[in-house]
Amino acid sequence: MKKPELLAPAGNLEKLKMAVLYGADAVYIGGERYGLRANAGNFDPGQMREGIDFAHRHGRKVYLTMNIIPHNEDFEGMPGFIEQVSRLGVDAIILSDPGVFSVVREVNPSMEIHLSTQANNTNWKSAEFWYRHGVKRIILARELSLGEIAEIRKRLPEDLELEIFVHGAMCISYSGRCLLSNYMAGRDSNRGDCAHPCRWKYHLVEEKRPGEYMPVFEDERGTYIFNSKDLCMIEHIPEIVKTGVSSLKIEGRMKSSYYVATVVKVYREALDRYFENPEKYVFDPQWLEEISKASHREYTTGFYFGKPAGSDQIYTHSSYVRGYDFVGLVMDYDRNTGIATVEQRNRMHRGDEIEVVNPTGEWFVQTIKSMKNADLEEIDVAPHPQMTVYMPMDREVQPYAMLRRKAER
Image (cartoon, rainbow, N blue to C red):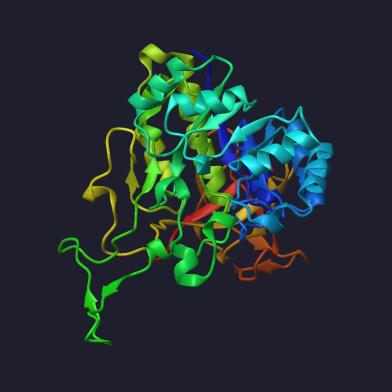
C-alpha cells in the first residue's frame, strides 16, 4: 500500500504555511478569479509566488482551483491567467468544466489536471473517459460509499489518481452543484459566491395566509431541514486507505488557520501511525478529542457507509461547536531566555491556562505567568488584535506554535 497524500485547504498565505508546517503533503489554493471560494482570502500573484516557493522548499505541492462553472465572460483573460500561474510553478490545476479544460490544454499542454468534485464523478466509466483525455486525478463525488470507491479504483489504470474528502462541511446539494444561493440571495455558488442558505431557518407560508409563518418540522426536533453535519473520517483511516485512493482531502478554505493546523496535525498523526504498523494499528480516542477542539458541527461519516439518514442532519440550530479559542500564534522563540514572541489572536490575560500546540510533537498546558507588550512594559491583558506580546514558556516552542484556551461559557 502506498501512503495517500494528505491535502489541506489554504485560503490565504498564512493558512498555506500552517498547513505545510503541521503536516500536509499538498495544499489547494484559489487565485483572485475562477475558484469556488470567492470570499476566501485567496492569492494575488505575489502571494501565490511566495506560497508556492514556501511549499516547494518544504517538499510539498500546491494545486490551484479553477473549478467554477463558467459563463461566457469568465473566459476573458483566462489564457493569460493560466500562463501566469504556470510560470509561478503551480503543480496542478483543479477544474470541472470542459471549456476550462480546453483552455488549460491550449495554453500549457504539460499542466497536470485534477477533475473537481464539481464534475460529479460517481463511476469508473466517467473517470476512464477523463483519463483518456489527459486528466491525472479524479476528485470523486461525495455521494459514494467506500465499496463503490474501491470498485472504481480496481477498474481504472494504476496511474490515474483518485482523491476523496475525509473532513469538513457537507453540501446539501449534489456534489456542491446548488442553485439555492443564487435564487435566495443572488449569489452564485457555482461561481464561488455561496451564501449558504441551506443553513438558514425556514418556515411554511400558506398561499391565502400571507404573513402567517408556520414552523417546518421533519420531526419534533426542529426546523433546520437542510443543515448537514460535518464529515469526519478520523476514526476510519484503515477503511479509507484500503480503497486505494491517492489523496485524502480536508475541506475548509474559508476556515481559520487554527482549524487548518489542528485538523491537519491530527490526520497526519493518524496516517503515520497506521503506516508504521497497519496490523497493530489502533485508533486513539485523543485524536477525535483533539480534532473537536477546532470549530465544527456535529460529525457524520457522510455516504461512506451508506446513504445519510435523519441522524446525519442538525435540526435544532446552525451554529458551530466552539470549545476553544485561538489566542496567540508564536512568531519567534529565544532558547536562551525561554521567551516567545507571540502575535495575539484573541484577548488573553495573565493567569490564563493555555494549551500550547507545536507543529510537531505533543501539546502541553501552562499558565501565562507574565506578558510584556512591544515596548517591553508588563501588561495584565493583551486586548488588541494581532498585538505583539512577549511571554515566558514552560517548554521550548516552535515558530507557528498555537496558543489556545478553553472558551468562556
